[in-house]
Length: 175
Image (cartoon, rainbow, N blue to C red):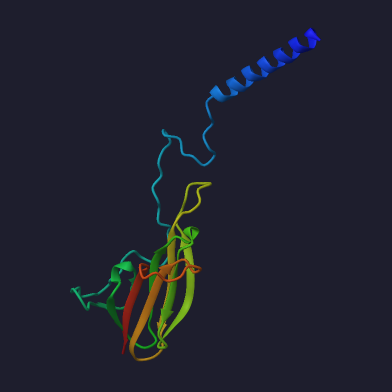
């Protein structure tokens, strides 16, 4: 009986030593954790053939009700402004977006405008990295004369409106 008690005690002591050694061992970093000495990579805007970063080609710039000439790409910089285009002309609206967070633009246009295409381009990212933002682009055509509106809300589609959402508004004067 004494022999069995000695074996059980030795087993418990051995188990305690192994357990203590495991607790004292350095923890490995998580698989998605960036090491402190790792090179940091900045975001890169992807190349988009036929599209330039220039947002105003022939525009007059004034504060308030600003009018911008057509034939350009519209971005967040033109939020709250106006453009003037001819019936049948098109413009491209590009807004930054990160759908991996659940947020996306909900865009509404008045009846005198027609969305011809709607697409998202993710920025380049290092291999294995997720959650990278990008640019949502809409090609919009003027189909009816008069004052038209483009309204966008940046929100998670499943969440209720709170009044704190980011908004985009553009007035389009179609002549």
